[in-house]
Image (cartoon, rainbow, N blue to C red; front, side):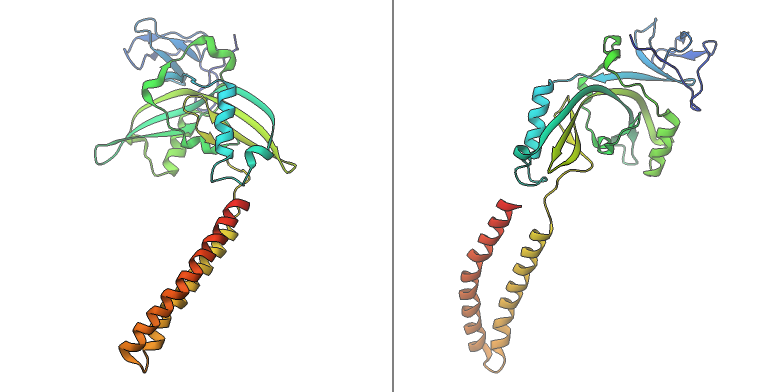
Length: 279
């Protein structure tokens, strides 16, 4: 069993003499010194203690084992975001699993709709995990049996509220907050001698990475610009030939434009296909 340490908003230990009430039934809780996770003896709710604030504590059940998570990573590597053949040329050099803590906030918006915001409850180098999508139906009460794989939260709830405020989300708009441990597979891989990190969420298979070998944008932008310039020039031909020749010149110019367009389209298409195959 992993040792737990309970902290207040200033990261100071909570004293066991403090009166804390269950956020579900209101029953008085008496945590032992240093206890941070506990189950309410009255309603069996699983809660997390942050100073005198008690919030529900959940975890997301994993549906992927490490091999399936690796498969999701390979599919992502073979996708449109990454360089060509990354799935074949990258070398996996390490993999690990943990239940990572996230602050889960339900916000009521002005239109009456509800939205979910997530904030990491511990330090992580992959900040893209902010974009996790947690299906509420798959959340389970935190089970002490996963303690050995659970990453302890180090970001106080008040700090999470301050981060939300930077996103223009006010604390009084929050109607529900809880701590959720999310199953994450962290993969380390090398590509062309450079190390990279990617995270696969073990419940949905989503892949998150801050820095990765992305497709070069310059070739796509170049062919797009060239195509736009060519068709702009073709569009000017009927206007130019109409000067001095009237409608007869316009008609002749449209025929010239159409003929040149038939010639250029397959050429440009071939160049685009070549870039897509090589980049």
